[in-house]
Length: 143
Image 1 (tube, one colour):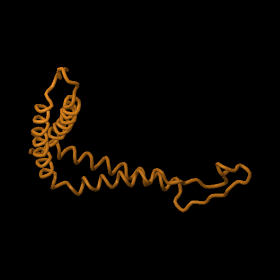
Image 2 (tube, rainbow, N blue to C red):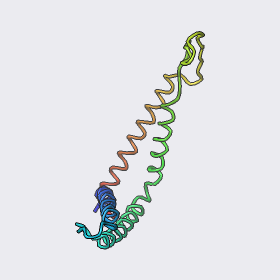
Image 3 (tube, rainbow, N blue to C red):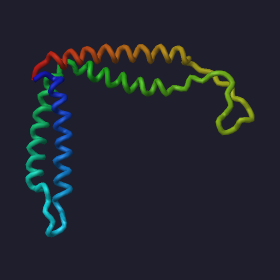
Image 4 (cartoon, one colour):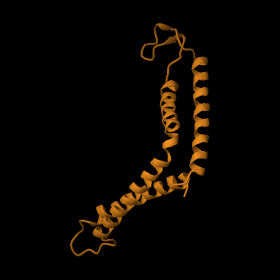
């Protein structure tokens, strides 16, 4: 199995874990005389077994990704930086305060909208490049 397949399996396992524990929560305490469609004990047993499988799978993925952690961390930080940068106010010129429309405010910027847009574009391109490298790694690396 390659990393790409393992990541899909991890997502599926996590979903199944939630569903199985949902059965534990729903059917552990029921009205006396009611027949539960699932056994809380059996569901708990399955949930614990699936948790162990997920831990093992995550460990394998973690070890297989060691050579590309720098790329994973870089991409994560770039995405965070991009979020902040996109929210940067680059409004300049005369504007009215949103609370008081009487006197215009003259705003100046140190980082222009064009500079911000160039930085955003460069970050997006780098994220895309790193994602392609990680996709290749995930498709070609076996665990």
